[in-house]
Length: 380
Image 1 (cartoon, rainbow, N blue to C red):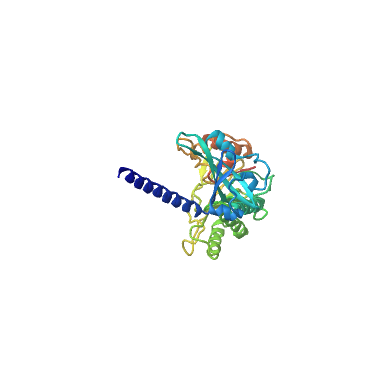
Image 2 (image 1 turned 90 degrees about the vertical axis):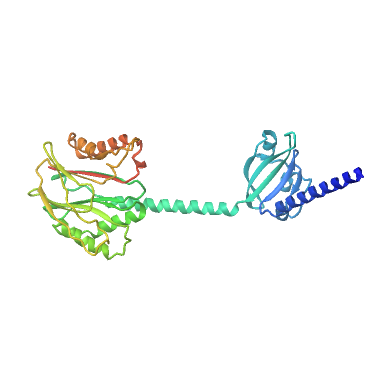
């Protein structure tokens, strides 16, 4: 009776094990990925249905490399590496013009000895093709951005009126295309206009706004406030989104008598006029160029520039650079350089940017988080 019970238990255990193996086999055969098991001599001892269907049969007992049409093992055989090293390896393999990601893992017995290797092959052909297309599109995009960057830079100021002023600027966008912009130009034989602007955001949308600014601002009027009011109206006809706006400080300088008239459309860092004895912050309120309200009014303020006076314009990118203690470079450090260094404008600007980058522990100014634009004009 005891023997009979033992046989029943044995039959029950064997049936349970058989059912379990059948269930596992159903799971593996239901996988989209290809699965095969190799012995230590590279012989195929198991293959799931997906792989068998893909290869046109069950090549059990054949060498793994023979199934791929080769006469000897692959030079980068990861299954052999797995057997020798005892841990998984991965590679890519081309089979029937399809690209597979192959993961090889060891199969160990109860004593920890490697008795076989299981390989899982995933078809990544479509992903690779998509990746290639993305790389091509990125390459084209970079090329287009470089062209756009050159176009944007070509719109920046050129040398003019060297006999009456000394002018220099530094323009460092934090991306391929920047949202800062400045321009200086002759209004007529006695007047020059100069403005600096900061557009919301960075990249393509911001750069397009800088182009809109340059093409739309009225360079014929001698009233900066009037020019900004016209610019505001023009902006409102374009249908720009509410989150897009431009801050602009605009000044017109009479080179004959030194009178400078200026106005501000929300530019949050005020330019300064200074010499070795004094400095004046050019503060004036004004709404950014936007579509927040139907119309905006701007105010003209005037001051007089003497020979040797300097006008410094900038955007907030330079003063907002932070060090490791989260402390900003700030206006005080900026002013300290300006008021103590009366080298030619180009040298002063380079020292300012270099000092700010050193303060923020930035080795390369191309890795800044915001656009940096600084300009310095001296009356001769």
